[in-house]
Image (cartoon, rainbow, N blue to C red):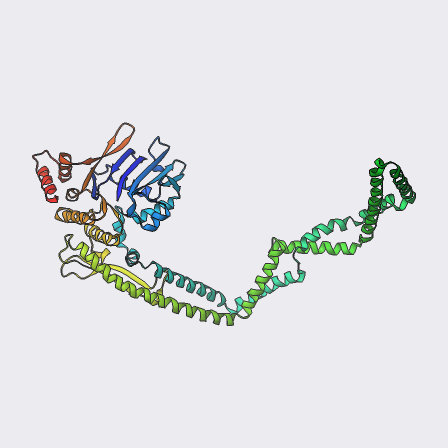
Length: 549
């Protein structure tokens, strides 16, 4: 049950708090008064799409808060959102930058959480939803929703996707001989281009490091020789003098221990100089100034660069392309064998799809009988003398889709002697509204709150009274919110709300007030044509209210 709803700066509502009664809650008012705004606000707090254009002029954001009874939620959702109290509150805000904020019991949650909770709490029927009943594609969805076929439909969908994928692969290998040869030549040419160079992983980095050294090998050799000579070969006497100085310092350190660090530093310096000289000697001996070797490396570097540009961007990508080309060449050379394998796989997948589709078809047939019987029972009291309603389920094995191989259509006969025909061909607007009311009653049997926005469109008189009775019956054990223009429906409500729109110089605002007593009678009279307390409309309004009691 929905206890209350607070709406702030939503469309033309400034600040409004409504408390709802158990049973049937009805909104009435003049055409265009804004009766549906409350329904839109409830949808918004339950995760429906929000639009910044609905934020009231001058307000930075809009917000809607709704309080529900906790026991209405399934146990798993109560546990998921830690709802231990008897009631819980949902809240959602939307600012002018399009930023949403959602809360469950004051705790921030994604908007999808509100949607999840809302689907378990409320079933909405908007002003234009009954038009969807004219489209056969919707009938299949409604039948599966009634029968709870979600898992089986998902299995069929997965099997259909497998068939679809295998068929695409089979079409790909079923090329003409000329096309196969063309692709084979192209792939072999590209593979040969890569294999001729045969780059190694990381080879490009090695070349990037080696080439600068080779390009400047001559200059490096000259400088290395000069440095070596300066350090060692060109002045052996300097080294000898250094050795003599080190021996002298060592002897001095024996006499004065404070000189020991200096003697050690000099000795280490001599060792470092000797190591540097040896390293330079090895370096210059290893330098290769062969111009031919340099040209070969430059040429290879350029070839690898071109490969990377064509098949890269990195050598790893080039090597991966080579593997893919080998696989494609193998597939093309063995296309006939691959085609047979795919045909076998496809036949097996099609057989599995047909098996699942047949199972789904059988279950849909049984569910169709139950759905038709329940809808007939629901709509028969709504002014139909000998109504007939059926759900046709026809299987087309050759044209399976992701939802199976069935075409489902609702058939309808409102009058005695009339044959069953597609609902879209014979039903009037009022008949469609009543069928939708019956369908919603059946499909929403476990949903605690039902919302109808002008479900009584296209009907009136005694039929309007019957629809009101049906809504009141639906409200037993659950809560129903209904926007109506019919006095016959409004008179049977447990709680009535009157919606008024006031237009100022620069603003338009909506006010909603609960009605009872004389004010309720006057509103029912207005819906019947209006007049004072002595008018026929007023007297009829009193009769309707008395009859409803």
